[in-house]
Image 1 (cartoon, rainbow, N blue to C red):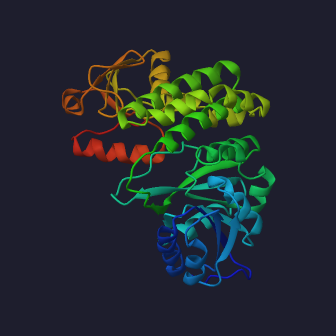
Image 2: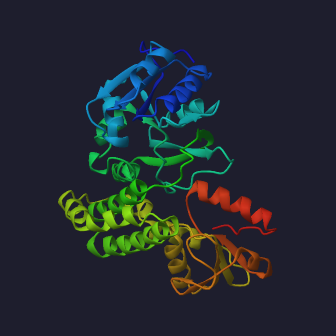
Length: 377
C-alpha cells in the first residue's frame, strides 16, 4: 500500500496512548498491506513514551497529530479533521485489516444509502469480537465516507472510550442511512493480554447509561439501564473488577442527567434498528420453531429481549445453555440456566442467545462442536 496524503483513496484513523511498540507493529502491517493508495493518521493522546519517534521511524509519510491530553477513542475526531481521504477507516492501535477487507469496505460504501460499513473483528485465537450490535459496527474496524462523518458531527466526545460507536450509528440510522456489516471484510484485533480492567467496566456501564437516556424514552431508558447494571455488575464480580463498577454506579446520576440534557429523538426507522428489543422481536418473528420447544445457546447482551419476544409470541423458553456470567441453576428472566453439557439432551429449536455478528459466529462454532444446529432466527 502506498502511503501518501496526495489524493489518497482513504485515510486510516488510529488513536493511541503510551503503546509505542504495539502501534509500530500495527503501522508496519498497514504499510505492507496491498491495496489502494492510503493515508495513515495517528492521533497521539498525550503519550509519555517514545510514540512520536516510533511513528516517524516507520514511515515519514504518516501523519502524526499530538494532543496535550488523553481524549480516548473519540480522538478519532481530531484525526478525521486532519485527514484527506474520501473514506475514513477507523482502527485501534492494535487492529489491522486483513487483505481484501479495505476493498470490500470501499465497495460497500459506493452505495450512498450506506452510512457506516462495519467489519467482522477477528481475534488472535480465531474467535470474533462480540461487541457492537447488528446495526452498530465495532470502532476498531469500521469505515464511512468523510462527508457522512462530517454531516453527523463525528463521535460524541462525552463517551471518551467505549460506546461512542453506538451513538454515531444511532444518529446515522436516524438520518436515513443504512448501517451494515460487510462480513467479507475482516479486521484482525490483538488487544492486550492483560484482560478486562476496572477502566473497561466503568466506561461501559456509565456510558451505556448516558446512551440510554439520550436516545430512549424514560421507560425504555430505565429498562435498558437496569439490564446494563445487572450484566456489568455480574461481570465485575466474576472478574474481580468491582472498583470499576462501583465508580460507574457513583457516576450514574451524572450520566443520566447528561443524557437527558443531550436528548436526541430517534426516528421511528432508527428505533426499529437501534433498540435491542425491536431487533430481538424481528429475530423471533423469523423463527420456525418446529415442535414449539425453544432454548437459547449462550447468553448474549440481548438475551432478556429475546426471551421476552418469544414469550410475547406464545412460545415457551425451556432453558438458556450457558456457563458465562450465569451459573447452571440460576435464572435469566425466569428461565433456568443449564450447563453446556445438558444441551445434548435438548431436541427442540436451539437459538443463538445474542444478536451481534461476532457473537453469532462464535456461538455457531460452539454449536457445531456440541453436535447441534442453531435454528434460524
